[in-house]
Length: 340
Image (cartoon, rainbow, N blue to C red):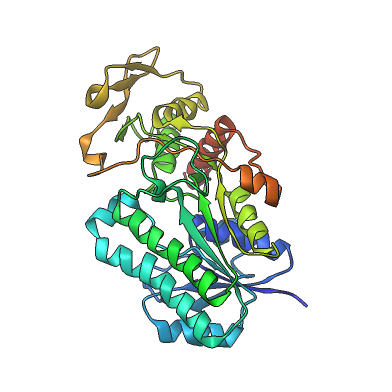
């Protein structure tokens, strides 16, 4: 008999890739989507699974709605990927961010506890919870969140752990470091870069304007990370796992790789807010830095230690940083060429 999975945040990058992965495993997949006038499923359509995923209206701000959905479909596995996921926006909307990310997760956990259901629960935690701590963050590293987004995610993370310990619920948390793909939203710097460079290749844009080029991240490929989510849920005992590549690269390196994908070896000059990137032949300015894209507080360095996941889940990232950036740029080039 097929297992049933409920994915919140089905319209996001991870939700779409996870839905495809579970469908290939023979699952019946439900996607929870809040009733919204701007609701779109372009990622599901791009992966050609829009007709296979059954969309249900479920809003994390309304517990009675959550209770009815859980009672209706009785999911074997729940993947809570829904969130206000933009760090910058969380400074502008801290209360809403907390309502969705923190209290929204608690509403699902409480609905599960009250129902007595045996559903397994996955919480999408984040490396942003670590803040600027020591290198090679792992499951034992102390948390030091530096944004409303990170604080809200840490609340949800600890609640999932607390309900696991207090009520013997199967709750696992994936502490995922940055993971990207052609399905990443344009609000994220990785896709802003790949999208912008693709426009520049086709003569549709003159330059990229970014925030700090020095921030360093542990960047992986999203489809590989959703497989790690699935593997966590198949373990005999629920636990928490860091999912990362173990390698770090700066935003500047991401930009360099993106331009390399269209055969431009960008040249840098200046430092800090004055730094610019030029075309090596024409000397045209291709990259500028603007304080408009700096955050009130920022995490400058995140590097994950995934040794626990490698040992227990037998999981390891397969796609190199350079290949990841190149496939994102080329995917955006193809989209633009197709639309013209």
